[in-house]
Image (tube, rainbow, N blue to C red; front, side, top):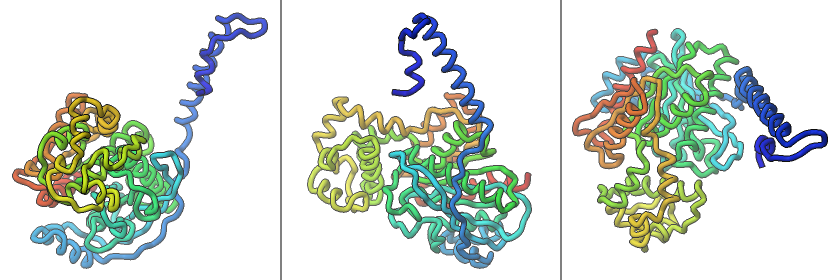
Length: 412
């Protein structure tokens, strides 16, 4: 039993009344709570940083060449924004898994070779099916290029690997579990802050965060945690969230009841979320409970890496569908609802970017997030709609709109 709850148990002591015991207990509880709050306000968070190692240097011309491969016709515009060579580092730090174990994780840090004090930009990567694509590997052709672009533009740029990649690759990745993503991101940023203080890095103490797709969801989860728990540690100025699946419970309902595009890579992500929540929330259902054969056996063998085409609900076990529609899957529904990021108040400038022809992460995620956050009192949230934009074609719009949002902070 919680030691504070013991103070409320009625009991008699020698020479004292029941009322006195209860009163003294309440006073003691208040004193301990007050002292605990004072103590947390007066102390720094526990150190997170383990090590920082040099991972190489990129000349501006090298970064322009990478941009040409990824950005196509927009590469020339990107090239005009680049000003600095970039030094890259791997950051190793302490964090906590969803089951409460302390582990070491890793992330990438890219710093401009020159320039004045600048904000720290944290970029949260999207879905990775290959462990070697983790940002801290700085593998050409991967999202780590975004950290190079931001650093060459003058920002300090970090990219956490998340749990399940980099130094924590032996751990199961908590795919699109809000806390499972947000906690390691916040710990990464605390570790980077420690490193900046130790090295005297030219940081202006501002933080900007961004991510697309699964990275958009991770960014919003981290934003919420930072505002609620780490507002004293970080001066979070702006957040840019692209095409994230913020409305988890709505998606569950839509994907059970309505047809989806049926692309295999889409289904892999949807399956991954189901498997993750089943594990983290200890629902302990066999794969065959959710999915019908022969798909269940394939998923059992290959996990989220399975390649299955067809509308997502055509993969589901008809008994599960019937149970869901009858309102008998409350534990699963609650797990999805717990990971919704659509009904909360933010005080930070927040840009949502989404293509309205996105069949992978439906556009409704951003419209309901905008509506819910504004209803909760968020005055600085806006949505930029990419007309006719698919999940893939809207990436460039997201990058440019994010840069424009963040560039205003670079010059301040």
